[in-house]
Length: 460
Image 1 (tube, rainbow, N blue to C red):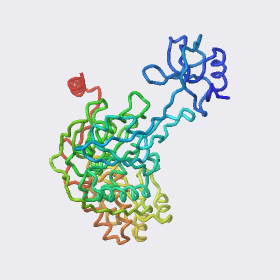
Image 2 (cartoon, rainbow, N blue to C red):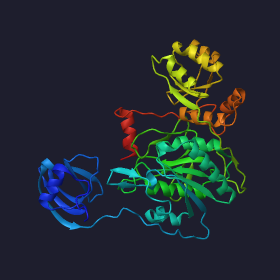
Image 3 (cartoon, rainbow, N blue to C red):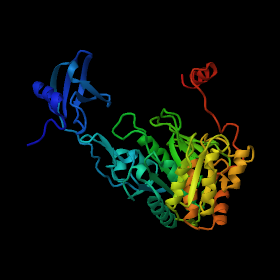
Image 4 (cartoon, rainbow, N blue to C red):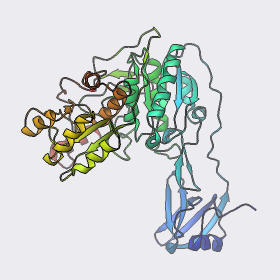
């Protein structure tokens, strides 16, 4: 017998039974707070029994407190099918050939109403069913490399992706797109920058902040922007493509070594740090912002360096940190530690003996900044000089996550500390720059008159 009250229990279940309303039924609900109309959705098996979930006509979901309900009436019934069927992607002569690697994440996901979780449920081929406009942009082939949330991405996946990208480039592809969860997208951007060098074609990592079944989803536009960039851009680098402003105006292409996720939910969450983005992109054109970048080439030459040591970690310094934290990492066999220090790159003196001990044990230590913007300057104060004398290497303006990825990549190739040092301080693609441009640091505060005037002038 079909369960017509999927996931409901307790008081909420009694209300549905009282008014004879089913899950997936369209209903009018009268409450003390107003009238609502929409589709009754299943409840998560882990949720409370005091609310009924309603998908409004606008596409948004709300929870209706059962205490406020005075009447309910079912006006129709149609069980929703959130599975989008796969469609064979058409081939159009003259359009660029783009390969999409699917890894999971919100850009290829749907909501599982049984658990209330967003799950990676769309195969890459289903993306065409969801975004048919892609057929006007490129000839698309897809491959589901793995299906994981971005927090489960790691060295194993980086190596697999790098090798797969190398094969596609050798086979003559015009551009590569990687569908990826947003939470650790900047880690993967850094990893692929180091592992896939001298690429003749664009490699574009893309995701979405909001799942495809939400009306405010950025998945479709991000995909279109990424596909257009991969197939048509002259910028042959590892890039992250996401919303520029939080509206639908355009996307930005960020360099894989200078990008970071900066907001938990905004669609414009990705920012280039300490520099400007590479370019603006929409469905029809690309407008470069930076004048210097690596250009697309016709050859198939690419250097794949799939290396990574998992004995690398990051240590975020905080006031009062005890040396046993560092000692424990060394005793556990870690060979590389990226410090995320205060100010110009500092930690307290209490750590000095443990830092010296780590150096004697052959641990490579690298300093980055909690400020994100700016440079490590360990020659300015006595603290910095003392730490360098004990073995910590300043990391310029390398972002902490990028330094962690690069150190893992370097130690995956060699245990020789001099060689590791050379690899770390030699820039591969702007992970360390000579200077930050005047407009590479913009962080304005709302409420200030001149900022408010600027916002009103740009977004009326």
